[in-house]
Image (tube, rainbow, N blue to C red):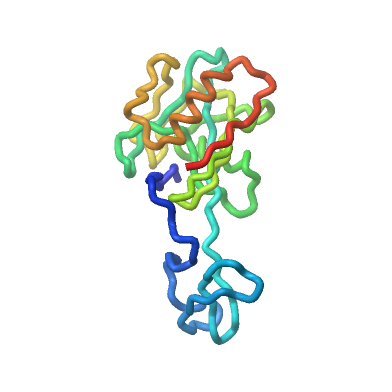
Length: 198
């Protein structure tokens, strides 16, 4: 799964009113919006069993796969909205995997990219508040440049020279942030992760 929510300029409400279910998953009682004791936010609460339902952000993991000589970067053209826009491999972290395992899995699923996990370095952490996401992105070395191919979520994959990246055709602001930060820090062996919020 790719970064699938486009950030916008409006911040979401700080209540759980946007959850997609209206009944308790434990006892099927209709949920009510309440402020649980000791909490500072409205939450959806079951009045029967008192279970509180939290609307927490999703964790997205991904990477910027860079060629061994550091001259090229792997991007994929999306087959899902925004269709035809270029992106890095990224998606939601699955239960039971670490963040770097999730990033490697996404690279394989989306672009059949094999990564060198030893020098895998945290590149950035982005808080995308409108999309309810926290994104952890890694800088990684691509091992199988000649054999990458699109997975089901990509129309095509391509290695781009840094000066040929289609900057005006990138899927999300976070993709541009990550690519520009990678390019600026190609030779930085003591990379400090970029921290940004939108």
